[in-house]
Length: 123
Image 1 (cartoon, rainbow, N blue to C red):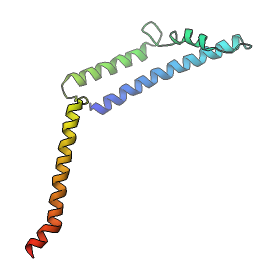
Image 2 (image 1 turned 90 degrees about the vertical axis):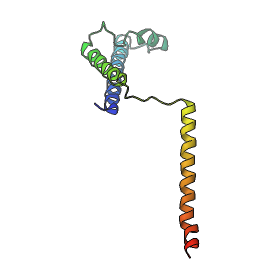
Image 3 (image 1 turned 90 degrees about the horizontal axis):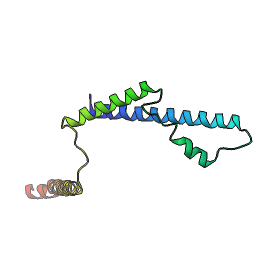
Image 4 (image 1 turned 135 degrees about the vertical axis):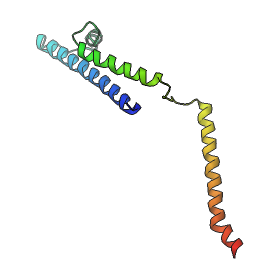
């Protein structure tokens, strides 16, 4: 599998996990609202229930966690083969920028010579 495809699948799984967590939080808030219609949900009650709604290995989301673990294993396998090149250090980036600027200057000088200097020399 290509690296972008693996990364996109992993991101999709993370988004699906987040959406299921959001759905659970919405259901909890709606249940709280129906039980106590006169009260509104405060930030303190949201903070106390925020960790309860996260998917864990003890919840009933075995299928979701299995997919996540599979995606993580694919990512680990893909990057451990040595084909992944992470972001370079600042020194590498600076050296690359200098090299590209040098190539640009040389090509610009060659173009100007071919455009202006060569016809003058041949005439």
